[in-house]
Length: 186
Image 1 (cartoon, helix red, strand yellow):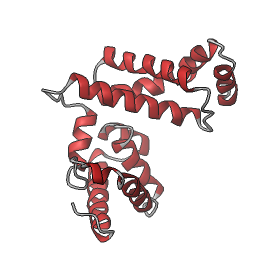
Image 2: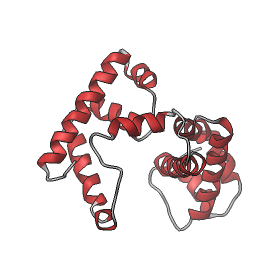
Image 3: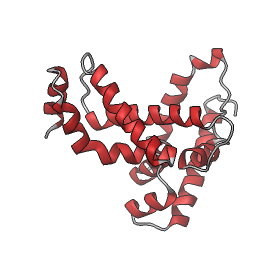
């Protein structure tokens, strides 16, 4: 079923919208959740919570790209679950590993004053990403937004894992330099 029809079902409050969403995007959403959580039950919970949040937010929202809308919900819910369940001990998930890789580029301590600047930081990062090749961009976004493993990225780009690691390292290094040039203290 087409996305516009699924969104229309949500707007009509037709419960088949959830079934259609699960059929079309269930595996995609589970992959996002499991990359962050590395736990089947938690991932299933996150995906189910995504369906509930979509049900409660459509209407008033009418997303143009349903997959991105649902993916963003799943990602945020999964991160919240990860933080709640792993306060004392962080397991080695793709989420934890990818965050540690980005630690050299972006500080994880944010004061109240800095919160307003996060939007500007996101725009600056997007500007930098637009200077990269399409492959460089999708590699970076795959790793640090979708939390894909190095192996997954290598597979979908048809390159070696060492090349992916090297590309990500160079991209992080370039991002750090770019952010410093833009006035960010790292």
